[in-house]
Length: 397
Image 1 (cartoon, rainbow, N blue to C red):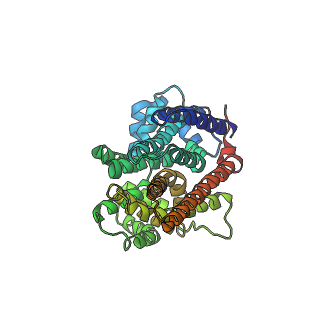
Image 2 (image 1 turned 30 degrees about the horizontal axis):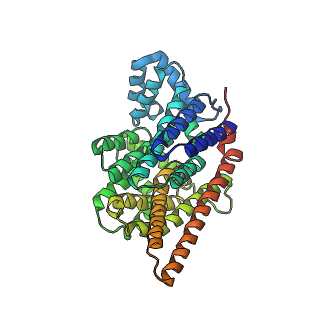
Image 3 (image 1 turned 90 degrees about the horizontal axis):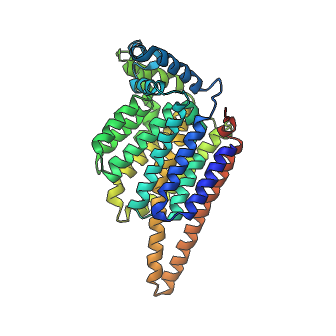
């Protein structure tokens, strides 16, 4: 915990002194520092990482033939998730198993911070708001969970980067499509994001107001539908998803019995949802509405799906809030906040009447309140992450 907090403080100091056109070096620093920290982390016996180390050792001694055998025999589910097998095989060619969590952290945090850097330039986001985005991610993204669990968090982060490039930057679309496919081969939960992605593309520029309720219902009936299909299919991937759906259906979040872990994620989801409701109309009235239309639709569908999963599969809900929303959803909020601030500044320059002055003062107060809300919640979450959350399980060799 102390190491993580020290890295964050060092990043904050470096970011403060660097000019905006040089702040990428602060992100390079923190990604490298977190990767080095992850390299030295020692997994607990119950962590998935301990099991993954054993699989990597088998691949180190058995080589390529062992990998092909494990995929052929669907060992560890690699027949359905071959990307995971190839990723672990690559790690087995390196001298230490610890490269698994180090490279995973490097790719995951690197993906999120690339989104921040690209959005900051494209939407002319101020240095303060860019830092606020970074602070929110470093507080609410569950470092130890991805460090110890590897696959799900990594798949979601890379998927999020591909979505941003596909819908916002509108670049490297072919590579993004490959990324969407590969991530579904790294962790089966990505298939639900692929479905949301396809729905976003298929519906085009149509209004999503009538479609979002179906995402809520989709989680409720999706597992039953997959289970029905699995009865008539021998496809390993469908059977894998059906098996996981059967295990996780019914993991309803009981509001009366939740602990701090569930409560913190529910709080994050509610705050993100309320801020989205406030800022999306502002974005839709801005010059960026066309650039962000499909991205906003994807986020709307995902939020509706997450809300539905809260009542049907608690694990799916937690994974979405912990690994996807800190970067993908919060970026929209910051863009909206920047637009709101810019609009206020333009009105200040055009003050000619008492009504305009009153309106500007009201907007100033709104901006201050929202900034304080985000900042203090992020501080509280950082304290929680360092004292009560999974960071307290982090220890080193």
